[in-house]
Image (tube, rainbow, N blue to C red):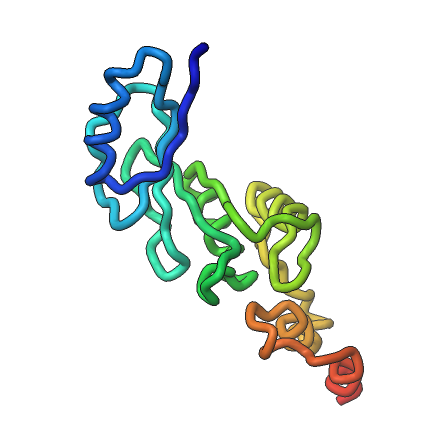
Length: 173
């Protein structure tokens, strides 16, 4: 049989992997995710799908021919973006017609336990494609409530309301 292979590698490791794969008649490299700093792509076979992972602190720019990969979950606190960070990345990619993929932390349809929901992400992409804000704000007449919404969806659990009664208390002010 024939096997198509996708792998995760650094630029430095990729040359050795490609040399080893060249001797394998039953394996074809079809995609690679490059870790670490990647400013330019090495010479790669035509048609190979290339993803470059960036952190939420980095630029969303990737070398020509590559697609952006961002994590939406993981063991580190910085792995889960805020709604504003995620919306900004989506808006950037749509505005620049840049292909991207999101991994980790999208296991539920809607936001749960600090993870963004995949339906929320799809709605944000749709809003950005339509020219809207992927992280919508309340209309002017309701703007006084925006801090409550922002606190309800804060990235860090410690920044959110501890319980429903805390939300009610802030709402009553």
